[in-house]
Length: 247
Image (cartoon, rainbow, N blue to C red):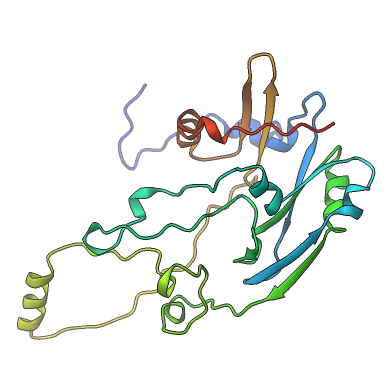
């Protein structure tokens, strides 16, 4: 491998097939017996979920399975853990971590939160069935500004997370810093706003999984930019493996 220095032009090996329209994306993969999933998402930033009626959707041709948060909870599946490295307060005191499940349970807490998952023989059938799911929402107060969110009396995203505080982090030497500011000729205070940013890939994140009953293993195609972390997650958390039997 040639050594590359900062500023060098690096030739990309994958560009030619993309320019020719020969790239392989998740949507290009078709497996034997493949079925499709569609996620029904919350239209509310904050709402209590009274009930979910999937009866009409389940009766549609080609629909194999519909999973709700209550189904997920009933089967005993747990929440998805986050990185423990960021779950700490000042002095390394731990902060409470809310139970983030794959599907909303009892409350939706952001616009677009998954509420139900539909599995069908075709993508179109799954999408059409999702539109027939009746969700009884009770809209709740929501706050969208981070500074407003930490004010006393603001609506809580999680009832047991005071002041909506996810991270309380301090780095450096407080006493020395305060002394330096006190001795400075000029002190400038300013608020810095970090705009939301995101990677804009050609293909949104998606995945296809194939279960091999003989070896009790999964083969996964995953659109991701962090494949090594995905691999390690599956290796270290075997209990996450889930087989849904659609008969």
